[in-house]
Length: 526
Image (tube, rainbow, N blue to C red):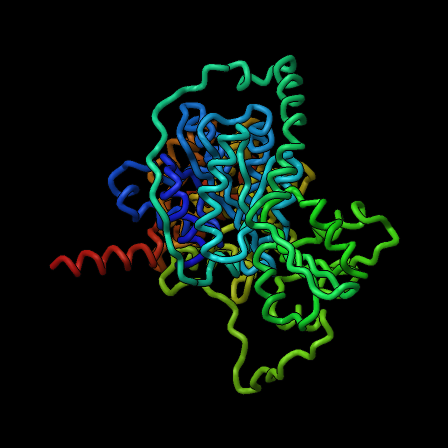
């Protein structure tokens, strides 16, 4: 199974009643696996996509309030979106078990940053897991849900791209039944008025010794002692595999896959060794904590000291190099093969939008086009070169508004349909409240196209949403992005650019990938 599939199957075997998620690589396959499972198809496990990660987290907490187990899935940047309910859920506690799965993306294969979600677990003061292989990913789900209900706390599980998208054999155990409906009775715990929040925070602090003790005794953390006085290694999660493959004989090894960092095991390793190398995929989360446990005089190395690369994901080769082992012979890129950057699919509606924007952009070099996260971000690359920003989900409209507030003209913005409902609507409301002089293009391909064509929350509702948010009817347009309609689209954009107020153009045409799948399915039935 893929690591994502092992996590999904583990959650099903642990008796979840719902999975709540917004698609994002490398986490998407978890929810898709559950949707295609017998439990998902029958409706026994709720598995529809959510509008964003915040709504996913809050809805999962609602299921927990009712006494049932829920899974929340997202990529690492989604943790930023759901941070408010995630952090507060440590104070409310949970009734039915809640596991929050954060799939990190070291090396930014399809992401805006390399943030490490383990910091969120430490920030929230809750237990968190980091599987080292697919079997552990499966087994940890049951452990995490049991721990969540025993401690009455949410539990974070962090994985990385290399584990999420690699395969290994998984042996499942016995499937657990879903919890019975058992709503929360101590409702004051969930009402974080200051008087309750102060009380609940004290309860959270009182649980810290037990959380730490569980990590010390965890079957997912263990010490493999080597010769006295040699090198000690702390290997976290997936990095354990690289160490086992690349390290020479004669090291002492501490595997860490359940947190908080097991301090007693770290001290025991240090007593046995003269120095410690911390090998972890992501940021120097453990490396920063170890000196605080052992004292400044103890030699600790890793990403911060340069013994391992400071950025990017780990590999057997760069871990071997940290042990002084020469990397394997590689070959330089061929002079006969040119790099091929990603491009829009043939026939994609985004192409027609950016064909127009490229022309206008060249004529108005003083203006700017603000973009967002989605397939259409490729409009920043040649041959279009017609996007000036891609900050985070939903940022296009708010960046554009701020630039217009500063006096920049003309200001256009491109945002996708799923991104608009994810977190763009609030920005449009701000713009509508001030009638900001920006032209917003909602490039609607009727799907969450970048992550595989999942359903989009606002399909066929965008005109109604824009009108409800305050966009004037005469400055709200709907077009079909096709080559034959380019002149019409150009004329509308140019007219609205001259308007000193808010205008919205909805460019609607189905994603070629989802359309092709529908056609194949239709033809297969004939």
